[in-house]
Image (cartoon, rainbow, N blue to C red; front, side, top):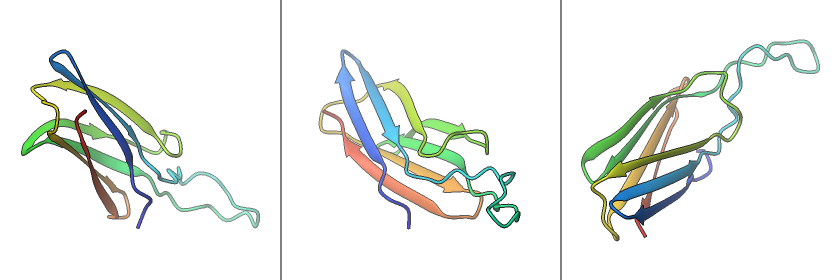
Length: 103
């Protein structure tokens, strides 16, 4: 399983600002290794963020995104102490879910 995401969620006025660092190799599928063999593609395809049961973000990534991507987004309606849950799914079907508390 992949390393945990680092998620920071802060309330600023009536807006919750979220920053997510995702540990993932994000291999494009076009690079060759030292023996000349193509390294298979392995990258995050979809990301979903929820505040409670409400989806506040849905995003699609592709092979052009850098290794260990960072995602910033904001939404209204959060309160201190609420949970924000982020889930990613990659092209090999692997997934990771982590959560943070809004501060």
